[in-house]
Image 1 (cartoon, rainbow, N blue to C red):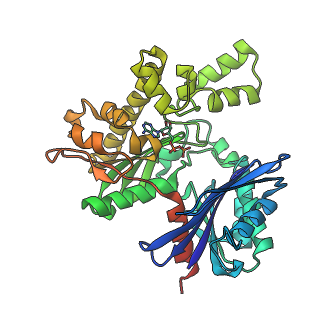
Image 2 (tube, helix red, strand yellow):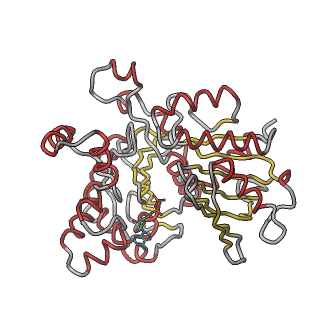
Length: 403
Ligand code: ADP
């Protein structure tokens, strides 16, 4: 079956079209990106494997127009990959926040839309955009089944003592303030795939997954279920990221607001856009630039990376304690899949915890699935490439073809 996967942001949308024959047998037909929705001139980049990229610039007033442009290009005689819109059997949406409503992906109906609407307060930048995408598909392709795949749902299995914050209980009751966690699709996919590839029983295992990209999070998974994760009520908690601070003493926020006379918007921008790797290095949010900086003697670039490595190490140690051991540690995301330096520095001097990295294998692992621990290592360490769109396409296929 043909599945259209949509990931709608506030002013952009990403798409993929996959021909799904089974969970493991599929072909990517096309993918692309619509940007600058709502601006004077928007653009669409359409990529078909084996062909030159196709790029158009034109005004794209809203998400409905953006999705219409995608559907037009997919069925275009010259650049398209489908003969008609009716070739698309189902649409899968990445949805940022499912709150406490969704433990798994679901077929979208009126009730589901209402619940996604209720979660807009929890993800004010993302959920409204996701809803615009869902409604645009309803208008343009009426009757086509749609599925929502949530960033948060994998983490709904966390125990209450792990997801609560120690602030007055009434704020959980009033505003649902608690840890939700994000990147769930990726943590679930790479942990399961690592088990399949490297001979571990997913339903009877202790796994720590490190999704390290521009946004980063770490998850502790016991017997196939997320039991703790580093992102929290929002994606700003946990590790230092490209531009997000990760954990800070909450007292700093009040102190800074007072000292600098900052508004809520300003402090929000500082913590989400000006902190993390870019904040410390004053150079870049991109890990590759920091590699280059550190190698040429830039001390702040080196410091930013060391802070990241050290924080990852502390989370791994904490989650080993929480899980009472670990069978496998999995690295994924742009940094996790590609940066041997990050993996080596995180995992060095952890022999006491049964982790022995094979440095040669680690140096070979770049964007491919492989084990990078030594045979004598009690804990397996793996690099596994993530593919969130594939998970969305699979869930969409499985939920819409279920009898
Ligand atoms: P996003 O969270 O936006 O999806 P990615 O998962 O693509 O981001 O990760 C982007 C990060 O991965 C950047 O910091 C980038 O520098 C880093 N990265 C990508 N390739 C490499 C590499 N070869 N070596 C080190 N870091 C890399």
